[in-house]
Length: 565
Ligand code: FES
Image (cartoon, rainbow, N blue to C red):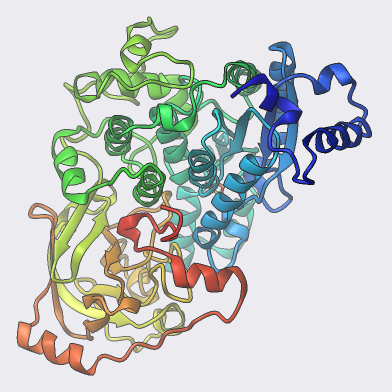
């Protein structure tokens, strides 16, 4: 980039007269009170995702001030601009549908507006992948910052954190062991500060992966939302973004590589992160033409130890993870397996990062040594078989061990509506050894691949004390959930995948050891069912949802749009 196209001179509005376009732009910018000297500086755009519909980003006004401080101190001009925000629990049908809208808006606004670098402010689940996808495609120097995780609340002497404990209390309420008065009281004690969910859910996983990819300041991904270090790190991020604006160097395509994607997969496995992260990482990598192959994922899983003892799988919360050493500790534990030539936004290689001494000792109770892992293998695997020819995902670390090898009778729900209508029916023919199957909840379905894969245990079984069952769907699951849950079955039912053929009473066999999921129905019968299969497709009539429906790719391709990869 030449000085001629830096700062306000970049990407001029097209009137057929460049000098006039710049003159007009400067005069309008001056109406905001900027001096000519400020307007001569390189510009750091700040992609700002604060919203009244996003509790997780409640600390963003303060973080924004800190980022601006850093940008100004390093000699550039900070200009914040609003971006779509995706507050996980406030969106219908589900936030995933809007991730690509946010990615598109991010790409276009970074490209269309005059900025030399950008700070991406994300946090809540889909915001981090959306911002990264957009920034990769725009390919201007970019620095990711996140809201940071929430602190835990307290209830009767117990620590509570959104939202693994939300699910645990709700399950107990459904089973009758928690009363209405207590569930109402707990409602105000689950999410008690700004920041993202307090466990190793999707937001925390994606923050760690963004840092592993090299797009964030070292060890900044897990700083608690309310800690002063979150603001100091924001100021530092602003400073770095200003340096990048001045140099024009270290664009996302210079940072994220096949090797850094592989490192991110290792970290995902070692921290037993969210299943959603596979979809998002696939979409992020897809923007660079890098494929995430589920067979390769399985070989990485076989050799990457599970090291982190956090909910929803283990005991601790994200604040414990940060004080135990954060991502620095995980990367050190995995050092022998990582590709060390990758570099981050500071320009250093991973090898150089890991050669630096740590400020504090690692707490090995929370982040284990590779010689003393929680499990010798990774927390997630892909399954294949005639029920999921292109793959499905199982978070084995969150599963009941006895159910990892299981054969059972299918109890089928044909849609989310069918599930809601019948799951608690006292006459439902279901027992604890059955396998619950949900169809038509994949990316192309009208429900847009919701986090419905964590099918509720039928009430009569929950009351009888059943805590887990094998559940299968083409849906997703919240990163904060747990259970023996098979997700992202591909091809999905709505596209005529074999999941659509399953009938009540069919036998299904799960083998985590063999990484298979099989429908135990003869090939002849399967062929016959295909011949009579009729799929009811609900096609949105207009707007973004129509675009989503026509363009969304399968889960195994990250649910990106076909024209954006
Ligand atoms: Fe925002 Fe969980 S609701 S991270």
